[in-house]
Image 1 (cartoon, rainbow, N blue to C red):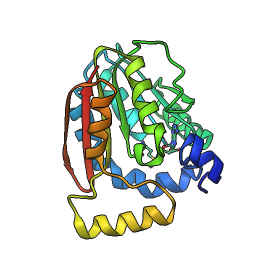
Image 2 (cartoon, rainbow, N blue to C red):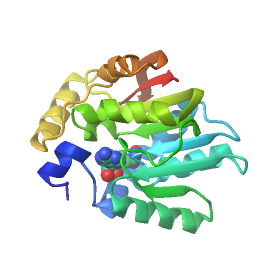
Image 3 (spheres, protein in one colour):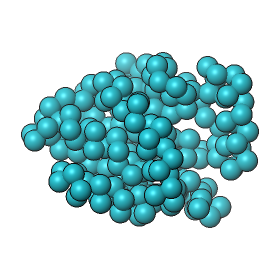
Image 4 (cartoon, rainbow, N blue to C red):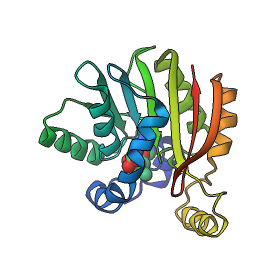
Length: 210
Ligand SMILES: C[S@@+](CC[C@H](N)C(=O)[O-])C[C@H]1O[C@@H](n2cnc3c(N)ncnc32)[C@H](O)[C@@H]1O
C-alpha cells in the first residue's frame, strides 16, 4: 500500500508493505550493498545513519562494517519497515538503533554521525522534502562527515529508464535523476560533491562532505 495523497505531498511516499518489499527487493539489492559501504567509506568505529532504511538490510551490513566500537542507526517513516528491521536485528543478535522517523525531521542531535547513507529513498521525497532532508543530514553530520545518496540511474539506460519513469509517474512519484541531487547538495552547502554510476545495475550515487 502506498501512502494517502496528502501524506505523500507533505511527508513522502511511505512503503508499508514491508514483507513483500523485502521478499522482492531484499534479494535484488543485496549485490549493491558492499559497493554502497565502499563508496560511503564506512570503517570500524564509525557512527552511521541509514536514512529510509526500509527492512534494514543495508543497515545491518553497515553494522558488520563498523564493528563493536561503531554504532549504526536506521530510520524509516513506515512503522512496518522498522518492525521488520528490528526483527532481523534481533535474529542476528546485533544492536542497531532502528526507529520510526521522517528524513526531514531527524531525531538526532547536531554533529552525531560520521556517515549518512540513503539508498532508493530520495525518489520517495517530493519537492521541498529532498532539500529539507539534505539540510537535516547536514545538521546531524559531524564536520567532515560524509553523505552518500544512492538512487535509480535512469538517464544512463534510455530504454529501461523510459519504462521506469513511466511506471513511477503512474504511481505519482516524482521523476528521478541522481545528477540533480548533486545540484541540491551544492545548494545546501556540501563540499566535494561527486556523482557517478555505482557500477551496479540501475543505481547511481551522489556524495558530499559537510
Ligand atoms: C524503496 S524503499 C528503500 C528502502 C531501503 N533504503 C533499501 O535500500 O532497501 C524507500 C523507503 O523510504 C521510506 N520513506 C519514504 N518517505 C520517507 C520519509 N519522508 N522519511 C523516511 N523514510 C521515508 C519508505 O517508507 C521506504 O521504506
